[in-house]
Image (cartoon, rainbow, N blue to C red):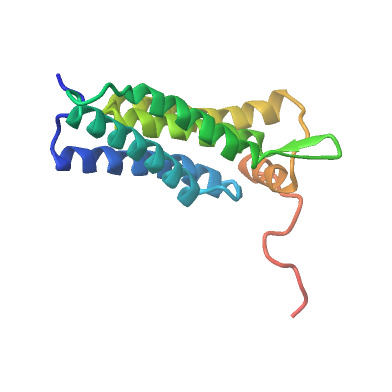
Length: 174
């Protein structure tokens, strides 16, 4: 099977699935109040998929003209996303913020790469695992592991467990 001897419709499907899976992960991050949300994750996944599709098409179209390894493009996506992720990590008074977001962006780029190669089942499964990690492990950490949390994270955990420390409304006098 030629990986990139595909129709334009197949390419659009690859890119659309990359966006949908990126949106799924980004929706979870938006729901818990993270700044990198649906748009960021969808764009990262789409961009990674597009780079792979372009590399594959070029290598297929010019196979007899020059030697081109599309896997090199995938490796450069990892480097580029590492740079993007590093910009999301902040340390303030010995508290690290943004590390999970950066890791999520990194995995979402890999999901985009998988979609770019047409590996939909793997991409979907990794998206599912990513959502399980973000959702389920959040509760495991809250219940069994004591970690420093931001105010938004603490509010989310408390509300998910049916406890609230703050009024939901503004609480002001009208």
